[in-house]
Length: 169
Image 1 (spheres, rainbow, N blue to C red):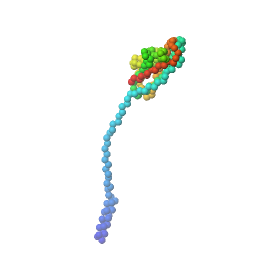
Image 2 (cartoon, rainbow, N blue to C red):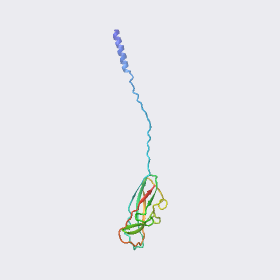
Image 3 (cartoon, helix red, strand yellow):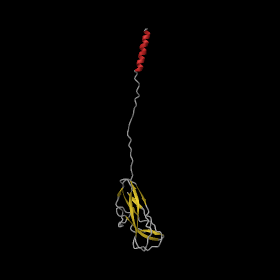
Image 4 (cartoon, one colour):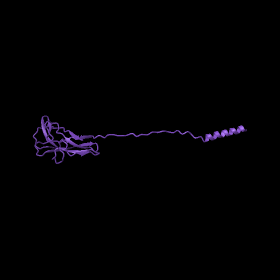
C-alpha cells in the first residue's frame, strides 16, 4: 500500500502543480521616438479678369464714353500685394494715354482706379497703383473704370487693345 500512497501523493502533487502552475508571461518591449512634421506655405497669387467693352463710340458726341470691368485676385492669406495695369500693346502708348487700334488707326482711352475717373491706374506700385491690399481668405474684386475721351476723329472700325494686369507681392 505504500506504493499506492506514494502514487496518490505524486498524482496529487502533479494535479496541484497543474492547477497552480504560473503561466509564462511574454514580456513585450517597445521603443518610442518623435517625428517632426513641417511645411512651408508660399505666397502665391492668381488673377482672373473680365473684358471691358465700351460698346459703340460716337466721335461727334461731346460726352466721353465710359465703361467698367472687374478682376479678382486671390493670394495666400496674409500676403500683401499691389495691382498694376500696363500701357497695353500699342507701341508708344503710356499708362496715361493708352491706345486701342484698328489696323493702323488708334483710339485713345484711359483706365482709372476710382469711379470719378480722377486717379489713373498705372503699373508702378506705390506711384500710380491703388494702395497695397492684404489678402484674406476670399478673393478681392477690383473694379477698373475706363473712359474714351469725347470727339476723337477716328475712322470707323473695331478697335481693341490688351492690358496686362500685374500682381506684385
